[in-house]
Image 1 (cartoon, helix red, strand yellow):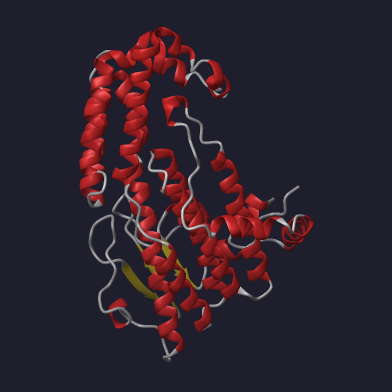
Image 2 (cartoon, one colour):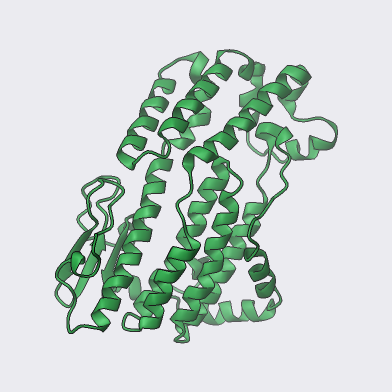
Length: 366
């Protein structure tokens, strides 16, 4: 139920009632979550000596906490308190910063997913209070205070450490490490529920050319990871394509590194959404001081924000009594006219007034 409320832009009254009951029944959790999220830095105290057997189970709890806060925000918006919802969503952005501090790929992707949850709250709040300067100012302040772009390259360095530890463990422990860490670490190995880890260690694959190719390719990825999207996406695609075509000696590297192929687009999409939402708040705030919406974005902002996908300005279009702000997206062909909620959610776009398919509540949960 909390997940539904956190992801829906408009929550049905039936679901809202259920969410309120859940929140009321566990009212002690809210201050605990707020206290944890307010910590300046978070050390998850992971045992990196486990190498690729290292688990990240705490992120299930973190995502649940983020949805809890988002559900609280949905209730606040339904009660006519969108500014309170925006300020509360700041806690989710802080959770994302905590995750990113861990400097590994899983943590980096987790930070993006948490930021996305927070952005959904801010977007809903803007639609709930498009003529309320307090709401629009709060959106700008929270975005500029609580969010900053994280380094993809830094997360690769953390993953490289885990690969290096795995190689060292194989060298020191021999074949027995192929079946997981021994003694005190056996429980962690038992949590591996798929065959991926066994494939990684089968035949001590990290000890042959595969290991060398993993490290070589990771260094190459690090060099392009934080480049502008066009260069980063092309670089990551080139590296992973070469690994896929390299035969046995690159098979392990190909499997490990293929997961990074979609990260440049995810990183650019998040940045585009941040800029679109911040710009939309600025346009609506400008509208509260004038008799009509601006014809051009430069009337509101001295410099139009850059679209991270094509490095041109974000697109702004007047649509009758409303407007659309959008990025051209990964395809570089998106025109700011999503056909349904699914496409709207996939792109970096803000339409005002909100399309009908966004204002219709999700069917109540059964």
